[in-house]
Image (tube, rainbow, N blue to C red):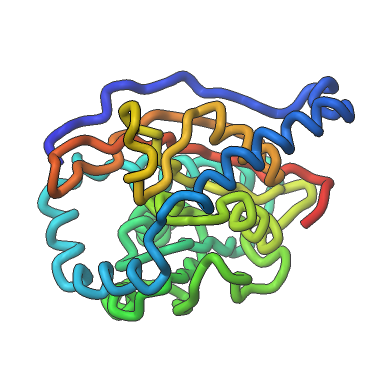
Length: 272
């Protein structure tokens, strides 16, 4: 994990203009999102049981490996800081000082919530941090951190939270494995708040890194930036901010996997 993220992109605002709301535009958008999303379903992906087994065996040394080279895993810090910054501005603008609820979706050992715990320690934001993950061994490690609540659940099934529960959600390194990404994005939309202070979602999506003829061997997701943003819009999210980041280096090949990190704002209207 010695590579560094040095290919940063400018902030992108994808709030839709009038043209995107025309009927033919919606049809094209839906078709493109379906194509990108179903590619994951058609691929030979890891099963939920395989994912749980892998991370169960990795749980004991996971934090040690990450902590040994934090610069090689920048996404939790970058995306977490975006969310904290966004929520701070939202509170300043509204004049409210209520405790905000944040969900770490696929929280693992809690690495992705580092910036939230720092904000709590510093008194920057009043936060409740919740976590959900499918691997109980990872959650055991996370239980030593100041999470308000931890749930063990398969995140590709209906999320175990009521509608409009959270002010923000973070999900780092999770969509690499998700077979129905648009469905999960819509689930996140369901459990997040709407209205004058709409919820925010910070996620990483893996870039497609296939060479010609390799698609059938690809076991993890990967999309072009265009495919990613089509899925996001179809699921009801607007791009507030974007950056290309190093995700990780493959432990077997040493090749870098790059992520597209997104800060997304919940779009009002549409189906839940």
